[in-house]
Length: 640
Image (cartoon, rainbow, N blue to C red; front, side, top):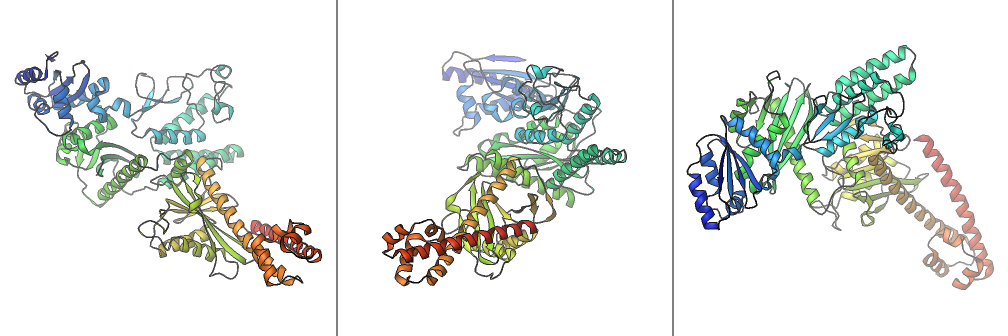
């Protein structure tokens, strides 16, 4: 190690001393550390030739790159010479984690990529997020670039295999101490080894299942659950068999939502690049057992791309792949589609990794899949930075539930209402980030359907709602929704999709069937049936219930208006002028039915006899319609 001190000088003296020291730097590979006048590390870099690389940072620059900041603030240089460039890469990575330099913000991997620790050395292993690997008897899964996704997956799988995620080591009796307020213990979402004598073998088996889930080995879990389900059924342990059946169904739904299966693909990785005007995104995609089991992404600002893209990619790979590989590890294969592709392939070869561009149709397909993910990752970051802000818990959970690429900030929900084929109406209500947006509400009096036909009515409502959209907006400036929810099953969903197609629109759309609260997808006849208390399901049901309320309200209003017209026509003494005055004052039958004879007499100047006859007729009509509506609801409930 060589230290070069240039402290307590003005700028001219400092730069003059730097120039002298630059002349004696070795022409060898190594790592250099640059300090400021407060002796704080501001940058760590590596170089194949130290003398050449360090000099570039102190060349005159008129832009706002990190080299300009180094030139203006650099006050001391520390050089660590190594034997090979690979050693320099690993030393740089470790020193960045140690010092956390301000100008290496995108490479602070010790903070950026956490691990999931499984405390297998304890009697009751736990799953804990950590940034350190300090326990030799623990298993570490990761690292992971998307911490939120890992936490959501962990919450999901721990409901299937109820092991602990406590912060402290577990002992029997802890339920009376620090674990007293544990929500998972109190709601029976854990095997509760802190409270009862749990089965240690079953607990360990569940731990292995969670590890396999996180590693993406879902088919193994399904196969094991299916075998144990049959074994339990043969022994007439039907409750146990039902438990394994539910686990199997849940894991299969997860595999179905991932929807990324490929035949004849070698295990390995895909490394791709995508960018927009603000950032460059690098995505690593892992393929195992003919499936894409994991994707990790990270971003670099565009203004750092020219100077730092190659180093950024190598640092990201070093962190995510755990370079250098152990001698007994299986050699990796990586398909690369990025800038600096040849340099990356050459560098990875030094680590014993086989890297190459896409060589066939299957590898091209893998590259396209990874690039699409990277583009959507950038879109999501852009949405968060803009005025849409962060999605609520329900919106984010709905994105995960429906396997959407972006959070459904804007949701339109449609419902149809009719009474024995009369007064057919439909409603569309809009939610923005989980809350009703009243200016997005629309109601439709169905024009093309004379009898009761919910399917045709749904088509008309969806078609009319979006037929006037231009450049992604309706005439009032409201944007195309991120998601459409249809109150109904497969046939309503099919008609809604057709209406969107006829308007040249592609919008994710799902249907919610009433009886079982099942969610249907356009391209899948098998619905999903999730926990109704899940945040995403609560949002779907809230949208559906609001659309239903709005449709019924409009249908009732039309029915009352028509009823009032017919009633007044039959009352002796009510001519055109008085009928017009009544309609202007009350609008509905129910409003008149609640009035007294004296009020009508005073407001309209009619006799008590006529006022009493009007009120009696309105009350009789209201009672008759309520009975009819109750019978209709019973019929619909029995048929759904």
